[in-house]
Image (cartoon, helix red, strand yellow):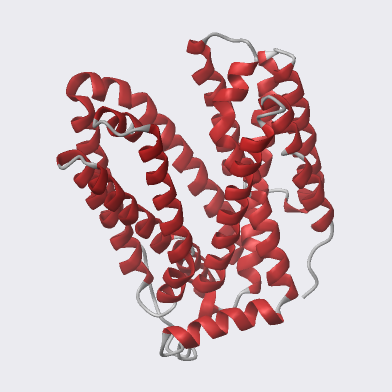
Length: 359
């Protein structure tokens, strides 16, 4: 609901767009430095601090609304997101490894994503009564309280250190060098980072789902229902993550076919075709958890968060490319053809992962 808050405060569309740029640039700039930091200090502490930074930004928006408060809030939000990105994956994978359970990693990652999507859907549904009861200030206060809850949950994460573990590099430069060395000397790591980055195409296209739903010719009131259908597809994919990993390449081919066919059907004004798009989103969510696990399997513990953050930078670059490409393509084509084009990268990825990596 923050876009409504910005508009109600009197910001112009150009000013609102500039805030999104500040948000994106903050995350991009801090992605790798935060990963390095996560390899040096307590990851649990960073995961606890991350939502508190975001919550501070929400509090500024809620109680001191102005352009500069919004800008600072996005800087805090972007910083918090950067602290979490790479850090969470590294902590979970290494803790599982210490108990011989890394095979559970894709299952946990997939279910985490599914629960997150479920929570977002529930929060969106609750927004209407909250706004009706207390307006934007009530929604802002609720957002702050949720971030405090996130910090409490982060404190419950286990974080152990093996006594026989080789000592970690003593400074950020050493950690960064180790991370770069792993990427430079590990073709499997480079390949996994590239694949994971390209996999984010469909995530970036998610921002345009309302436009695709609208293109089917349904009423404005039915658009959220079609978007919700796609969200349910993503949730289902998350819950099934970790199963049937040998079918990765065929599943990605099927995802590409479903996305292209669903987009074509939507362009032909068939609302039911969005079901195919939902299937594609679910398959990509399922595959992403497996590919994330492949990356973690290749990384050494000394710079795990740093290398994972490098994948995060790749995701940011791909998303920005998709946004720019959609903006340019929209001058010649509607949402249907543009979503169909977005299916092509998944055929390429399917070819790239058709065989298991050799160790």
